[in-house]
Length: 341
Image (cartoon, rainbow, N blue to C red):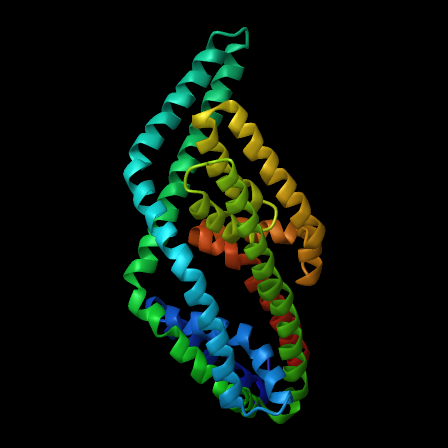
């Protein structure tokens, strides 16, 4: 096989990109403020651009958007943060007792069907299923606790993300132009098309699903509060975040609420189950899993695959990011092939 200068140049570019990926993998634990800041800048860029089109300078537009955002956060936080902190403290204190009640509930269910006329092999299968469910529940609680503690331990990094996001927003065009200049002239048109497709995917997934997550979180917290279910705000926030996960998010988010309600009374558990059913029927009429799959350009089977793959590799965070990352990867691969052909 004869190697031309084109082949050598392509090999060098691939090795260079692999080297960059490997470097970022090595320093991944310190990248979270920059990643969060970049996502925040991406979410705030449309209103900033809108204000620019109305005649404001970019710096003033960013400042105005920040003032509005921080006003909402401060006013909302003044009411919600004390309740959330109280819920977290209460949850930490009552968690051992809750887990003990859940184990007692499992043993009660086991005793009920062990004394039934079910075949022995079926009872063993049910035992295995209940054990797996119990382990999955404990794993979920552990992951959720680790995530909350991770936010606390990374507070300094999270605190500087608005500052980093401000710089990203202010230099947004220069950053795009800088990356564009790195692309060979013959590939720039395809590169710009790829950016537009990536923006379309991320707009549909990140911005759209964040709005839906907020709506679901508010509805769940309000409904649980009316039913006097413990930790209503905490469960509502978790349900809103988990709702971003297609197919399984609604079920995972409902499980803690129904379990806590069941510990109080079966009637309350039925009410909470109906509450989640109604909320997610409404949510499904806005952005259903199938519509999400179409927005990101992935078949529903592919969506499920990347959900499992992300969950296996990175837990809950992997499930949240699996579909958007896969969709963006598909866009980049498609345009990358066009560039090289």
